[in-house]
Each structure stands twice: as structure tokens, then as C-alpha cells.
Length: 316
Image (cartoon, rainbow, N blue to C red; front, top):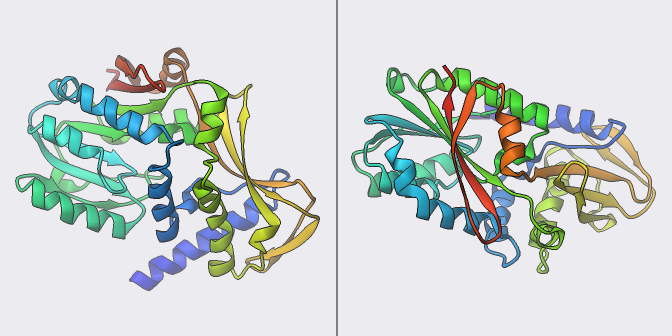
């Protein structure tokens, strides 16, 4: 069974790589950042002095956790989307003992198992129901949660990685999957000065560059590519019109590379667009949510390096 899953994943990776590199503007989904090495590099990014989002959100969640807990029903199921190490989750679990079950959702079975083992030690009464899944696709909650009020948890400003139309489609999908009377707690990075944003995605120690280039490492290892990493450079840019940081891997020369048996030409200066990180204002996030089946009922924002946490409730 494990080998079949690996084969399916490799096929999807190859298909997406060929389609993305063959597009007029070369692109690859940021979900392919997160193999074991990529996940470790992202943890290192979160520790760099320039990368404010993680520590800012953690500080805000710690401050507002009692208020968040006040709105969580008895015997609720907490569903975290893209749970990773489940560190932010502890702030909710500590403040809301009425949460009876926790469904961490992640594409990495290893990350889920490690998080489950750690949480089981500290929360003995909590039913932990890991779900290996891509939350952007069809999501079926474990049968044990049937009938329980559901609270979705979507931290990390991950919603900013999606194009606006993709984000609204995701919110509509989650509204249906989490059900009536559900709510969704969303962490959202807010617009701030350009210098701070650029430094956060291009740290002086080069960890983000290694994280971005790890995609090329994966191409070479998993898709039999012949890419010379030294002929590409990491670049972060602020797109003012779309209010987003973009990450690119830029070819330094004219070159041909082969990935998954297909050859692609790069002009000098041409890039692979690897990630977007949209930044919001409270008003623009409210506009994004409008019409998706959710209502914004409460918003909290940090004073330093502005970041927001929004409580959405299912619109009847």
C-alpha cells in the first residue's frame, strides 16, 4: 500500500511539473516545497530574525486564546488544515478544554504521527484523529466526529498562498465540508512596509533561498532532472498591484533542462514562479470571505508587524 501511494504521488508530481514548466509563465505548486528536507528548512525559516509571521501569530494567538475559547462549543471537534507540528494548536487546546477531539490534516503522514505522539502525552483525554489528506481536495472527516460541532483552524496565513479565486473556492468547499453551525478560525498576514516583507522572504542567512531551491533538488532526485542548482537563484519580489510577495527561481543563463523526460528551455532571467503570499487588510479579507458561506464575526490584529486572526461562522 505504501509503495502505491508513493507511486501515485510521483505521478502527480511529474504531471504537475511538466504542465507547470511547459506553461507560458513557468510555475509549480508550493505544496511541493514540503518533503522532509523542505519541512525542516521551513522550520529554520521560522527561526530567522527576518521572518516575523510565525512568532507574530503565536504571540497574537496566545493573547486572544481565551476569547477564541469562549466561542468554542462543548464537545467540539477541532479540525486543523495543514497542521504540521501542531504547535499553534496547543494554545487553543490549553484554553478550550471543552474540545473533545482533534483532527490534524496534513499531506505528511510522518508529521502527523510525530505530532500525534507528542500531543497524546500532554492531552490524555483528547481524541486525536490524524487525517492524511490534501485539504484543497475533497475532505471527509473521520466518522467519530459525526454530530459534533466543528471548529476549523487555518493558521499561518496559508490562505494567502492561493490566488483570490482559488481562496474563495476553498472557503466555499470548507463551508460544505465542515457543515452547518461550524466556524473557521483563520490566521491572515496583513499589508505592511515593503522592506519588512522582502526581508522576510529573502533572509540574510539564505535559508529561504535553500528552501526555494529544494524544489530543484526534488526535481533532480524524484523526476530524473539534470538541473544545475548554481544556474538558478532565489528571488523574492513585492507585487504592488496584487498585494503579494512572489517567490521565483530565476535562470541565470540561457539553458535547457530535462525534467521527467521532457526538455524545457529557459531564457536568461526567466523564472519558475514557486509561491505567492498575498497580504490583506481587514477590509480586503472581508471582501474575500463575502459570498463564500461564511460571515466574519470577530477580528483581532497585532500592533507590531500587523497580523490578523479572524473568526468566521457558517452563514445560515
